Structures are given as structure tokens and as C-alpha cells.
Image (cartoon, rainbow, N blue to C red; front, side, top):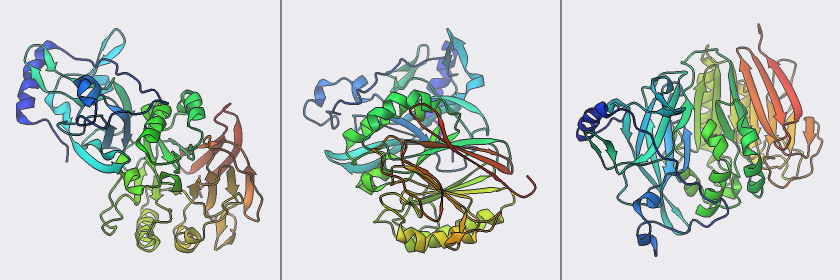
Length: 446
């Protein structure tokens, strides 16, 4: 359900429409190496901060909880934890007016949305992630938006006491059933290498990815300071694409991890496992994210996974099935294969024709031959497993096993281009954008 502006706000906005469009002022940028310093309005010293600093949107990012063609979920945090109303202003970019090259959102009460907060526990108490989910959007459309809060709208001068992010852009996915070309990226294990991520994020963000799948271990621990540092370093990626992460072992407190990202809460998963397994369709690609950590309850997740992949395999609009999780099924590096993944999930991947399975955990790049039933698959069959755990984490030695098609101890991320029945995978060195490895997969008739 689309969240619209409350009646009083809608009236004020309608009255303000005659005053023209409004724009946000640029927000300040957090120092990635600085301590967060303030726990909220009731923290020691926080009373010395003004409303603008307390309410500045930080760690802004976009995920999906629903249909990728018609919905988007916006998340951010502020230093204020109470007395804050999260709001979103969003419009198709084509409907925005230009003013000196800066887009301006049109004043229309239908474009104003209000959300809520999701609490989690961190090292200094209770944190809050502000979330606004919007549905009813147009597929394959570039949107401009700003997040933040405001108090009220003056009928002649527009919003009063508005504290908003700079304008950002995001694109909805194609309509359901589309076979239009799709590009997405995969990477993980930035812990211990966040400074290098910050140094190269602008170049990485030039990848024309509609979304990023993150394979976990973004931070070395799950403190608020480390997450602030990561969000600051990854900002160019987060500003350019939707992001869908799975947790790694270094996120430590998984309740904290899930409090920071708004992910799909699958109705068929038992209570307590919401967001620990999720899936979405983007064009002709079906993507599944799984929690493979030690705390994960593999058996009920496996039952959900079996049903989810069976439905995807039966959907004639889906050509490709992709799964992502942190701990590798097959790896020739330091951590090696993960027994619980091999036991609980790999037979389900085989049964329903998964094409690619991405993981991290080992800090190298490895691609397997197609595997089915624990052996090299016949031509045209099997799952290809990719370890992509080298997004600047300290490298591990690579290895070579019966399943290895390519391995290298190198930093990497992966770009996947899908065009109907053809999939092209490219592994890229994030430091110099050199191509490390390539793979071409083609469905019958493609």
C-alpha cells in the first residue's frame, strides 16, 4: 500500500503549489574516520546540537521489500531517535523542473510519503533506522527523491523547517515478465579494507548496475561507528543503485545487521526468520538471498528455499536463477567448503536448476566448473559457484581443487550482464578496473 501524506499536510502542500518547486540544500558529509559522537537527543552534549544536525539524514540507501518494478524502500538514520517523523519526497525525473541544472521536485501531495522506524541495539543503546516504503511506482522509470523530515508547509513559501537530504536518483526495475537487458553487480568482504573502498568507490560506481548484491562482511564488527564508516565509503555505490545484502560472520550481531537494512520479510518463513531468506524477480532474473551464518536455522530456510526455487523454475518468465550467501559451498582458499551449505542447500540448487551461486568469506576470487550432485556436471547442466570475497578485505591465498575453473588471490567484484537467454559474467579488479575472468552462459535457443 502506498503511504500518502496526511490530510493536513496534503492541504498545505496543495496551497503551496502556487509557490513553485522547492529544492534541498546539500547536507554535510560525515568524516569516515570520525566517531559518531552522539547517541541521540538525550545523549550527553546532544542538547548543544541544533535540529539541522540532529535530523541530518545519514547512511541513506535503497532496498526492495516488494515488487522491483513498482516499489522501492528508502532507509536512513539520524542522530535524533525520538520525536522524528521520516518523510520522503519522490517524483519521476521527467516531471522535475530544472533550475541551473539542479532538478526540483514538483509540489504535489501525492508525491509526499511518511514512514516509520525500526529499532535495533548497538553499542551505545537503541538505534533507529528510518524506513519509508513506496508502492505504485512506474516500472523502468528514473525517480528523483529526497529523504528527511519537515514540520509544516507555509501556503505561500512552501516547506517550513525542512531538513532533507540532497536530491538523489534511483530507477525502478522493468515490468514483471520483461526480458529487457539487465546488469547487476556482486561483491563483499570490505571489512579491513574500507579505506580502499572509499578510495575506489567512484570508479566502481560507474558500473551501470541496477542493483548490488553484497555477500557479507561489510564491516569488521557491527558497531555504529564501523557502519557509519562503511556507509560513507560506499556512498557512491549506494547513490547509484539499489543494494541487497546478506550477513557475514563479521557482522557479529545479526539483529543489528537486519536493523540497518530493510529486506523482504517472506510470509512463508516461520517467525524469527524474517529477512534471513528473501527473493525477488528483476526482469527474467530470479534472485535469492540467504543467511548462511552459524546462527542460521538451515532446515526451515531450506524448506522455504525449495518452495521458492520450485516456483521460479515453473515461471516461464524466469530464465536465470541466482543465489547469494556468505559462506561458500565450494572454495579452495583458507576457509574451504561449508558443510552446512553443502548438506542443506546445494541439493536444492541442483534440483531447481540454479545457474550461479555467489558467496564471500574467503578473500579471493574463485569460479568453479558447473557442478551437479557433487561432481562435474554434464554440458548444459549444473551450478557455477563464485567466491567473490575480495572487495578490499586482506587477501587469502587462492587454491586449486577438482571443481576449480579459475582462482586467483586478488581483489575483485563481479558484473553480470543478462540479455534474454544470454548471461555474461565479468570479474573485475576494483583497483584498476582490469578484467580478471569472464564466463558466458547461454540457455537453449539463445
